[in-house]
Image 1 (cartoon, chains in turn green, orange):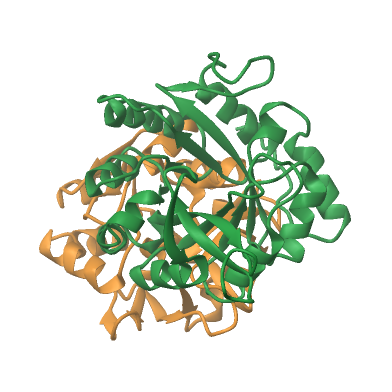
Image 2 (cartoon, each protein chain N blue to C red):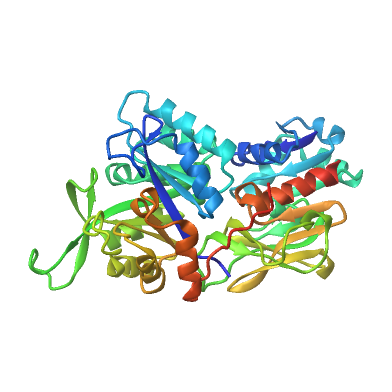
Length: 265
Length: 201
């Protein structure tokens, strides 16, 4: 059976962690390689590096990070955050990441998805979207819908998240990350309705993101939300839960997860 | 030395780093002459079957690889590299493969999400040194939309359940192919690379 995936997300800037236990948000929280190795050893199924470097050297910094990770971590990993051009994608893939995650750039220049998928395969191109809940109190429509926003949630696009998911799949993404801006940071749980609506609509795997406060939220989004994977940042960085704790919780409730296999390699 | 064949079908560095981790030197090469002199050939690859065969042909690699294998050099196909071992594929039209193992490459039927992406487990069908120390039911990282359908039952080494039971490891003698990515499958995958390194000697 295909296992449901648990994916820790590491926020990095200038090649360093920006969040972690014992550190406030803007302090240096160590080398992301150390954290990546820890998550790998604990049984993470995949890693996401979200890079918020804003300097002109961003591409070199990302390349160096990816190279170092791929020398030491033998699970798949994705790099996202400010992936804007075809050359950004090329750097990420050629240095050894499995996937490049594209968010705002896909809204501004959707052809980047086609170009990336054509050159590196759909499996290498993740479509990531930030979505905000809209309901009848804000529009004339009686139906609940979700609007795609960009620039970290600041800029509305007018795009319907479900239609945008369709388009991203048509253009060639192999996977979709759905990040709920409403849920993000709340620790009240993922947006189950958003996740399920898109998951039931498209045929590629859905990674749920935003709002995870504990393993019960992962259970909900993997079962009721029909997600293939659950992504979380804070609960792991701040050591509220470990990956084995989360996987044990899920396995006890009948979710297929990959047990850690230590062959001493 | 293990030769990782570079024919323009995806990033090979992860495979090289995987071998390095378990103590085997592997060189990335597109030189046809290297195929006969190496201890083992690894053919990774992601992308379309037809493109892959075209690239191998244009690089003059098909005959040297087939000849090296017939001379007894161990071979490991990874992902698309497994599929290329077979007679033909139905990906984007019908394309001839290396035809070292009889059978066909087919697309997953309707019903499950395609591509399959994630960790799935193997059910071992017969013993092989490639799986020495790898437990039945171990999980490996898979990314694919097509699977191999061997014509000979004896070529099936392991199967995996994804809506259908498909063949996730195939081989005969010193020819092996795995549908998943051992270089991205943590200890279970590194063990397979290590076993292949040992087979290659």
